[in-house]
Amino acid sequence: MSSTTRIVIALAMVGFIAACAKKAEEVVYVGDAVSVEPTYTGKYK
Image (cartoon, rainbow, N blue to C red; front, side):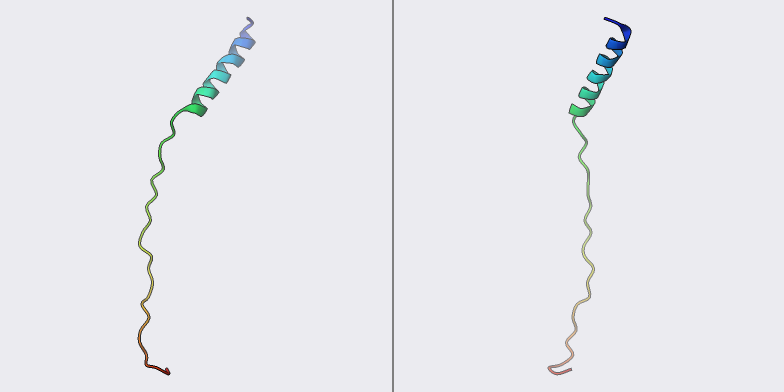
């Protein structure tokens, strides 16, 4: 095989292995929602 063919095959194998590698899980932190409590202002206010 020529050296160019070997390089192409090697790069294809590296790409395949990288694509199939186990990916790290992303950690997402969700904070508490900040909201204002409604205040009682009377029946008709």
